[in-house]
Image 1 (cartoon, rainbow, N blue to C red):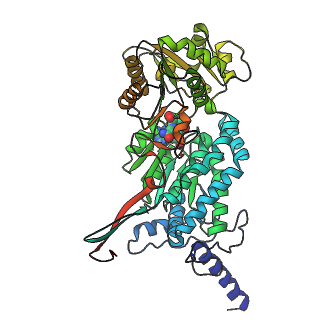
Image 2 (tube, protein in one colour; image 1 turned 180 degrees about the vertical axis):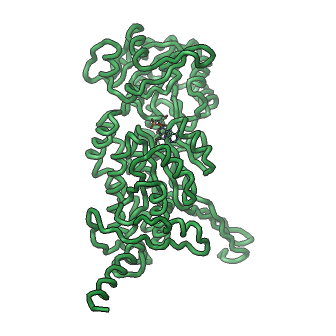
Image 3 (cartoon, rainbow, N blue to C red; image 1 turned 90 degrees about the vertical axis):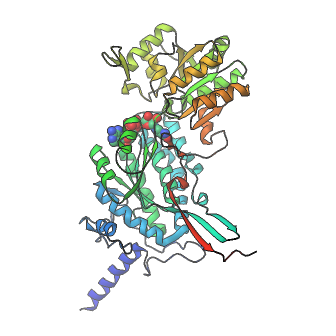
Length: 519
Ligand code: NAD
């Protein structure tokens, strides 16, 4: 063999080992006291693909075989793959690399995602806004600035017990590869928060984004993977299917490398995930009611309702969607709303908007007409809704509102547009009962404005929601102006609550009998 060939082969082997985190000069093993950044050369924009190495994971060969059995090169893609199977195989390899590189690599991933989300908030916010054409650009940007509030590696702490029979340690350990479905309403923010949570727990993941918000997600995931590879040598910790579809969702659910699903979306995808046979953590739909009684500060209530309901043109699943107000304070509340960025529509204007914002199909629901939301109005600006209502608006209008009965489509549908129906109720009991009906037992989010602890307690017990916010905007429930932490995936029907790194772990117990108790 010539000297040239020998040197070439050495370089290639070194490169491959480096990418695997082996003991090459390119990538180093984790340092004893923390993660030693790899001295990997910055990858070229489209590095030459190298063959997928065997992803050996010990004695059981099935997953390892699957991972290397695709003939498609898994390198050089920086997370973006054509099929679910390639994306899963690449993520499985990344999971094995992350396991080898330890906690310090998880910390590095968390730091990179939070830093890049912050740094690219403006450009990625615009990219998502241009692609989806829903919501508000300023709030798309704001949501990316919030990724720093997502909990990370520090949340993975073991629990220990020490007693007469020795010591026991319970550790929160990874599953492997998580399949994650993201919504059109916040594509990059949900994906970014999910990466922080899921990788903090030691997992890799594969995303199937909403088709109308998939290009921006692919751009962000590529940037995350490039930076993560540069710093840790791990290439595909979070992968994505470039052109997502129902078929790719089904392929993801069927892939045996996927140990767990995280679904963020509406009722259909929650149902599909629950029927998949995989364990699913479901961040499902909401239709958050607000109840306002006569003991609260009405100015504070009005400001809270507008700030939460108007955020991103009411695309948030936690956002205020309908208001029940005690009759004796309803006029004052609406007056305060008008003084704080709201604009009141009269009955005829509400009627015109309703006809534009919903389509009514006859024959469903026992002969009654059934309303479904007109997607052309979801997440649109107040000016678009105002035009449909036949009016011109002051430019600083945050949200529209108007009086409706309790059985109005704007009350019972999750409309996701900046119009709030205001329903008068005669008693606290009626307000709570109507709130319960409007929430549809999603057990997602409810809000009350009240200084009466008995009213607050009664509503909290009756609604039984995952988030219950008192005297503030709904967003306070995610740590924005309220105590707490942030995630854009709030697991409601499956009960895990506001997702955090522990949500994506298996609890494993290690027991030492009689010994190692040191007192
Ligand atoms: P959506 O349900 O239309 O889509 C969500 C995701 O599911 C997308 O990736 C979509 O492609 C996929 N999907 C939809 N139907 C599917 C099916 N039958 N099989 C497989 N995949 C399917 O929702 P959206 O309009 O993108 O987002 C808004 C919805 O998501 C609202 O209902 C909102 O409340 C909910 N949401 C919930 C949370 C939460 O944390 N609980 C967060 C954000 C959004």
